[in-house]
Amino acid sequence: MTHPTDASDASLESANTQHEYTVSRADLPLSCPTPEQKLWNSHPRVYLAVEETGTAVCPYCSARYRLVD
Image 1 (cartoon, rainbow, N blue to C red):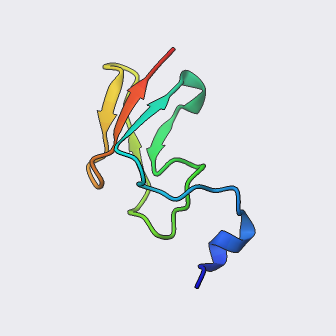
Image 2: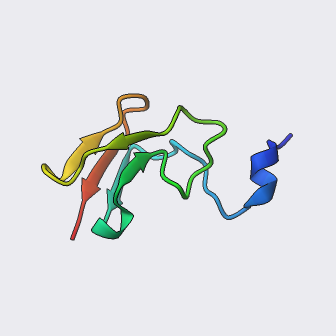
């Protein structure tokens, strides 16, 4: 069974499948799940401040994000 939002864009990847992600400045502002991930089967989208320290951890799923230039 699929969710209606899956049919609209099959190119989206599943959310929360990795424990660590690398992101670039082009990906800012950073959210978890990212816009490239399916939102329907995940937690609510939350924006993370990664610019100052270079790392951020999602308070919902504990995914770690590392900013690379």
